Image (cartoon, rainbow, N blue to C red):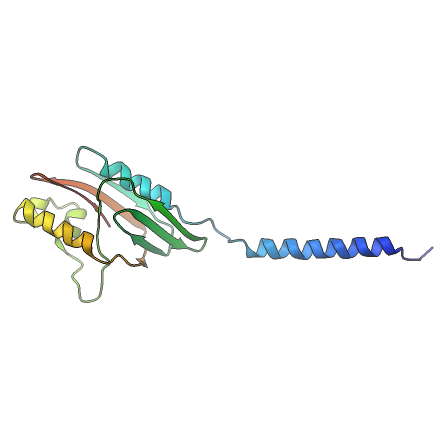
Length: 162
């Protein structure tokens, strides 16, 4: 009456192994989803493709960001996500470093100051944007909000992202 059947022992061992494997897979899954890089790219594209001056902000739930003319990458607790930017030529502002003024001309324009109040002429504005585009865009701490601003100054049209 109390004898163990050999088939039952193998069944219990199989169930135990499947349970351990399932628990291991569940523990390996990230606790949070990857950051929303495609949403950030969509916000940038929407502003940059506009005919008129425009401003938008997008909240970021990530620890680090890397922004180039053609892509945005976010890294957070859920992993890393990257999305392509389809808009024509954006100007990502360089990472703020120690010893570099946080109040650069382009940052002031991004914050809402008219470009003619910051730059002497449209050529100076275009040159500053070109310098910002040519900097090395490394990973940096992500802000809580990303600001995108399309600005027209004379014949110069620039989309600032920072």
